[in-house]
Image (tube, rainbow over the protein chains, first blue to last red):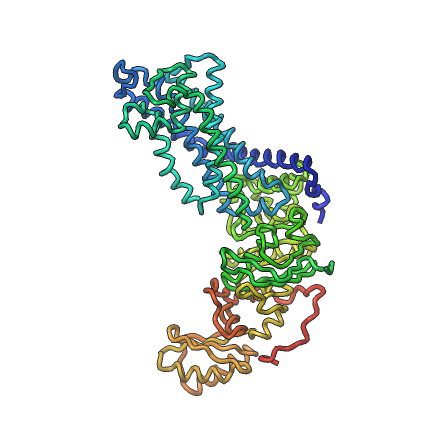
Length: 280
Length: 354
């Protein structure tokens, strides 16, 4: 019985509890980073999908795509690359949901909740780890894009703003992922979320301009948050600004700020409520 | 409240959407003892553990763990308890050592102390050799031991174990049993749930048999055995026509008032016996006299189903878990090697077996 005296008693004051919350959050991030260090192959698989998408759409379908009106394949890399950045962020919510569902399924969340640690860390740590994940994902994708010949046409500030908007969307979708991960019964159901993610990612301006789609579908695609961020990137990167007549397409940067904010406003409280419901 | 109790619960009630899971459960567990919650699936064992481990709110009643009120001071309770749930809650993508360091850090004992404590626990739970491997390569017993080690970071005063050996093979069960005994030898109080009669018998100082969210019986293992009979004699006929004669024969060696149970499908007759060896030799002699041929004859320990039948007069409400494993596990471990601490044997004899 030597260990108890090592441990400080649970934090009582608000300041001490806040400090625990930060330390515990970082410990959970450390856990996630250690995963990647121990099993880089797992990480590589997760990134495999967007890379395959880039190669497929740019080279397989891209040559037949005429998005600029200047002939098939013309300017398609510039058009599709921002969309693929967004798509990688958008599909990331499934990784979050799966990880949360696994934590729940394995009884990990019960062990955490039976400990004096800050319970918020389970969620904040997950979120921060996924953001770091997203930054690494983006860095690798940008390198691939540069190799393929993609260049930003915007200023450094505008380009950085574009990547900030990407992470802003990813953050909002982290809350969605945590909510869904807590909602589903097990990891099997979390895996099925792909059926939800696929149309959400595809019915957008990622690969084709909405105004080329049937009217009703084009409207849905144009107003998709994924399209909003993709449009904002095309504007900030000054690459192939192809727009139809949709109002949202004229205000892409504003939309790329507001859409994720709205999503966060709905799903952050929902995820917190869902977390507390574990005690019922 | 008396301070010598590590766990005290009075009239715990809990319903899930109107379905009662606990209907007034009482518990009193002195420090340094192992207490078993025994019951079929759905009896409320897990609900009780989750409430006491601060994972679940309850509707009525009161509960104290390690001197702290579960409802009002959950964070102090968490500082004093360890929990090993039904699933092994270890991170399969970290090494065994990294798992323990992770939990140590979450207890805020500091990075260096967390590493030292991890090494201590790896040693204590005989995992040092596999410390740098991922738990997914472990056997069931090793995983459970790592799981136990993770709940022992702070050497908690009270340890909750929810079905610690479910799904383990006999060797794994023995490993985990030994680990649990070692912990209590060091002073930890353990509350464990099980649906194995022999596990409760092997480990516990006292047992609460739970049925439909209520205490059915609270007793020592010895007292419980007196109530439900220590052994069952089971005879299996070689042809259906022999069953009635066999049942009549088996009834003659039954312990006081026990009725033989006839299973038409298995062609078996089972009955509680007081002195197993005597009953066995007696029945063997009479079988020879009557010229009855048997497929099988033997002694075994009662299953949870049979215990419930004896205690309640009706079968367990929910299908019980797997039957108690064969007695060979039991025989390889000497019983009574550990004296109940600070517990006096009940003087009251039950009517059935007085």
